[in-house]
Image 1 (cartoon, rainbow over the protein chains, first blue to last red):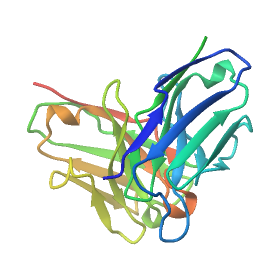
Image 2: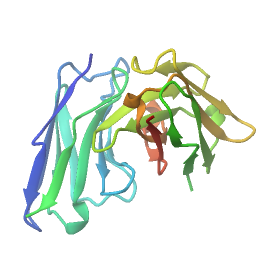
Image 3: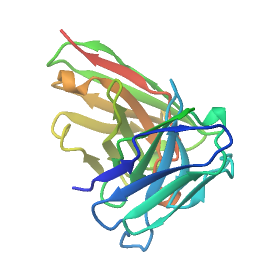
Image 4: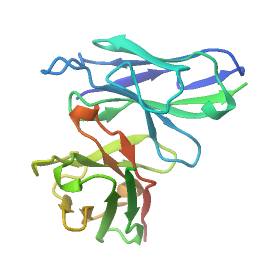
Length: 111
Length: 118
C-alpha cells in the first residue's frame, strides 16, 4: 500500500517567516503516463479542504504565489515563503498515482 | 462556477443505511470523475470511492461490499449508498470532483456529517 509520511506534524511560524512541509512516499509516484500525481491541500478550521498545488508544482487558480511545491519521485515539499494569518490550518499531501491516499496532515499555527 | 452541495447525512444506528447526495452545478457529473472522501472527527482524510467518466467504480477496502457510488445524469447528482454502517463510518463525507486530467480532486463540497451511534 502507498503510504505518505508528512513532517513535521505541527509547525508554529512567526508571521512573515517561511514555512516548509515535507511529504515522503514509500514508493515512486511516477505514473505510467509520466506524470507525478502529488497534490497539496489546505484545510482551514471549520472548512472543506482546498487544493493548492497539483502534480507537484502547479498552483491552482487563486492560490497566492507565496505557496510553492517541489520534489520528485518520492520526496516532496510545500513551501510558504511568508506566512500570513490566513494560512493557519492543516495541510495535507495526497497522491493519485496508486489509488488515492493522504498524508497525516501538518497543523500550521502562528507563533 | 463549479459547486458541489452534499446532503443526506444524519444519525443512524449501527447496521443501518443512509444515502448521501451531491448536487453539482457548473459542470456535468455524467462525464466527470467524481469521488467521495471522508474525514472522521479530528482525523485526516480518507478516500472512499470513485466513479469514472465512463462509469467504472472503485472502492476503498474499508467500504467495499457495503457502499455503492452512482450518479444520475438527468439530475446532475452523485450518490453514495451506505449499508451495514458501523461506528467506524462516522465522518464528514465530502463530494469531490476531478480526474487525472485536472490532477485529481480539484473541487470539494462543504461536506455532510454521518454519525453512526446507538
